[in-house]
Length: 119
Length: 112
Image (tube, rainbow over all chains, first blue to last red):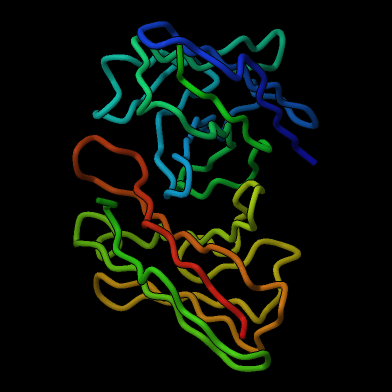
């Protein structure tokens, strides 16, 4: 069974860069066929897709965040990462990593990690 | 404003059936059979309940069913149980705005 686990700082200062890593176990990112996504959920709100990376390194980002987002993959560690630059309080959210299919179904999710942007 | 529109809340009594709607456009829900539904309990990650409009992943009870008509998809839960009380989100592939997937705003299901 594929499992995902987010890790990274829970507190980030305004204007700095939010960095999170998702470690995948029980399956290999390199095997292909899946789109490794980051999704966030503002407190008490709905879900917002941030972007995905394919094992080959191809990326696709939400246009509303594209100028600030970078998603990368390290297949040797079976991890993929999120960087979100120039954060503000509006970026405070629970961040999830997820394994998605071509039909956009997110079949596996990490437990989520709360990132608070505050000085 | 979410790309897909869901009712904020629905409720039902144990044993009853409820339906949650998810309305989009021809660029998403209406144009593709790539609608998914997720269940989210408080403090937990979403769980995939339905994919490709009406398919259930292994382990999801057959009380959960999905359908689509035009630009509106629906999730029906029959034989409501207390543990079904949760937030439910729909999502769809979209061909607009270079997005990959859009979500609904979520529906809070209360089991009375």
